[in-house]
Image (tube, rainbow, N blue to C red; front, side, top):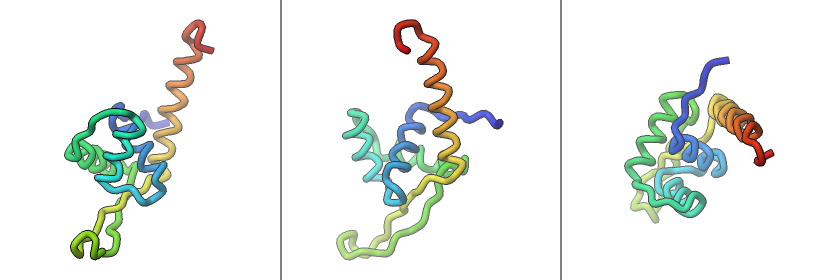
Length: 106
C-alpha cells in the first residue's frame, strides 16, 4: 500500500470537505474549521491546503453556477475523491492503532 502523507491541517481540511458532500468551498471550509476545530484559520491557508489536496488527487473541484448574491461570480466547489477517502481511512487506522497501544486509553 502506498504511504499517505497528510499534515494535520490537510487532514482537517479533507475531513471538512468530506463532511460537506460536494458543497465545500474556501470560505465555507474556513468557517467549518473555525467552528468544528475551534481554531482561527486564514483563508489563504485553506486555499493552499485545498490546492495541495487536489494535486495529490484527494479532492477534485468544479465550478458552481454564477449567482446574483455573489455578483455573478462562481464558487469553486470541492469534493473528496476515492483516493481522498482511502487516505482518511489509512490515517484514521494508524491513529487508532497508536491510541490502542497507550496504556489506560483502550
